[in-house]
Length: 381
Image (cartoon, rainbow, N blue to C red):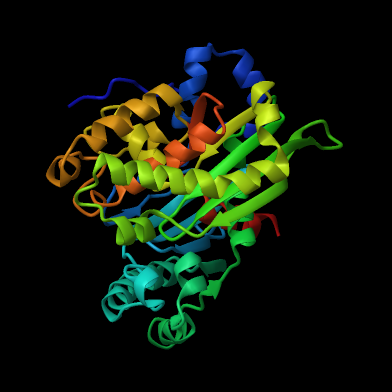
């Protein structure tokens, strides 16, 4: 299997504030690929991932380093980075599927096995943070810990055994961090944006406007946000994932679409969509997985996925292809793997509902979110 599209050769760390100038110099076809080339040197794969990036020779060896840990319903992720220009350079990273929220919908509590898996992952994160001599960091937990009755006790155990102090953040704060982390990928000349994150235990939807600042540049201003109480793990727990019939798939789409109606009614987003004034950006394992499959990557390569563009027709084609495969067929795809093969169709169904509700026509793919938002916050204080 080979890649069907090569990334555009741009500097590793472009000045994102000069995006309009970059845009004017590129063709529309190149624009669909610019984000994929202009990113920090981190590569994530579907399963367990470690990376240590050696600093370039011209960087100061004692530059300040910051850490961001995101403990979600499905994944435990860490980034360690140092400031570089208006952004940062990743020097270490870790990602592991822990399924902390597995069984949570049925029991209301974190299972012993899920907590054990998560503790193992957090020990690795703590070792990386300690070895990097991080000057500041923030460790956060999201939907699984918001909902689990025993999460406070679990986080106390984490603090005692691992030494990490993890805070449970609100869905509103989660949405803000996602927007902060993904903002560099938003097109500055399209005034409105729908940003979403299909997570393991919840789906975050953000409606924002790119407001003009006094210096003439634009920054995102959140007009509304909603946290829908389902994600790929909770939906898979309810409906199954190894075998998903067409009827079950349609049922998930219908449930997700119904949950979006109040948010649309409150903000009247469709009128702006019909006027061509809305862009859409997805930050989730679902959209990055679909992008990797569309690109026919021999393995998941972040540098090819982050910032890429998918049309709604391409999304529908990949989703339909996956729905026609059995569990083994999905697991055999190098951008899915065995650990995600039962989750991907639930994510596709939620994505189908989002695309049907707001027919923007194309989607910017972001392999970034909460951790990047945390790092940018820390480096700007």
